[in-house]
Image (cartoon, rainbow, N blue to C red; front, side):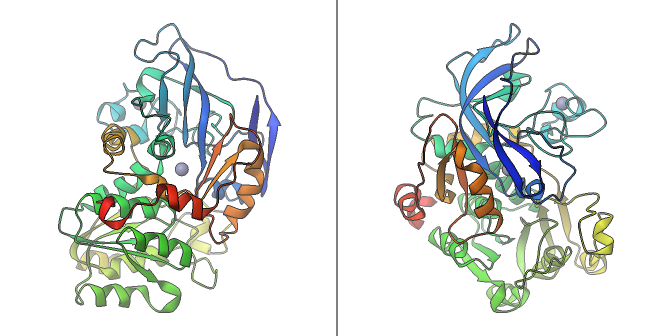
Length: 402
Ligand SMILES: [Zn+2]
Ligand SMILES: [Zn+2]
């Protein structure tokens, strides 16, 4: 089959690789019909991880089941399923508590496994024609009969929609509260979408890419451009000097100032300053335990100069870590099914698999208009859909959104 393979820093290629097979009786084989490029794929693309050459990337996957192992009972060939990016067993200590992002079985010696990702186990990704899904009964989210019609919405259940939702959960958001979200990439945008659905009184987002800020405004979010002045001051002004009730970090360890210089502690300390005393912070942007490629001495060792004194004095609390997708994906699926959520508004490009290497290049350089790329491995040739077409199809009106 054809797959997108990591060959080295800023080098990904479409290559023929062996077809995945049923290896264990609990496996399911899925023909991938939609798979996204994720912002976190760019950490690998840029050579800022220890991902091995030859790995098939892609952890945001949806498709149709083509074969099931002998021990699979719930899932059948023909089912449309969305796969959480976490691969989990369902029976370990963490999975039993719903913490499937920290499964102790699938990546021995570590907590948490994923498809096609550095340090997350030996699993290939789904930017390919087919994908092997371990423990298929547990890991497949079955989609309803509008699976094909709403495929572009449902594929967001693999990662960014639940991850954005998780950021607001970790922050402790309750209806009527205000929330500030650092980062208006796909995950930050989904955190904003989630906060609107949950009934936040004010949703503020901080970024500097005009196209992304404009998209956020369209769903009723207050968008702050941090290249035009201190984001903290702007947030304090909007919240009557008090700070937002809740804050989310949706950028991660490669955060940088508007001039492009990486400042690893920038968003974390800005959150401490812009969330009100006794408020909560949710961190889902990726941070790593070592980053040899960083120019920052502390960051090389995975450390941050964090304003812990201010964090303590304000009595803030913080939740961190990757999303346990299975904790939310059924419910978010139902919100999509009934039309209460429509996360596909984030999509800017729908492409064939062959076009993926080029798409990585555009997405990595944060080119204007490249907010979210979705690949359709079963379609050949260019299906390049411009933002304007996407907006016509998927962009909600503010009133409809929530
Ligand atoms: Zn992702
Ligand atoms: Zn487990």
